[in-house]
Image 1 (cartoon, rainbow, N blue to C red):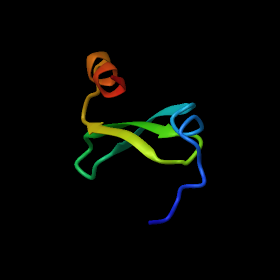
Image 2 (cartoon, rainbow, N blue to C red):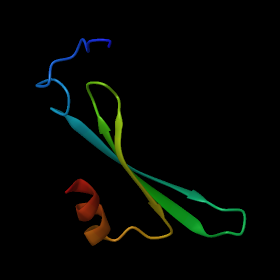
Image 3 (spheres, rainbow, N blue to C red):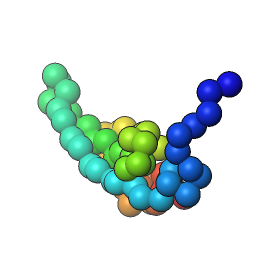
Length: 62
């Protein structure tokens, strides 16, 4: 098995959060909420929906 070159303290030590939006062909808007690990650039969470209320964002972060 290949050994990881990263230590456990480096991974998950700093995250980035980003909101994105777009529009479907029928005119409806959609939103994306992304959480990324800055160290290894892994996507930790992606929420996609037509609406992203605060409670849903909080749930993704827990």
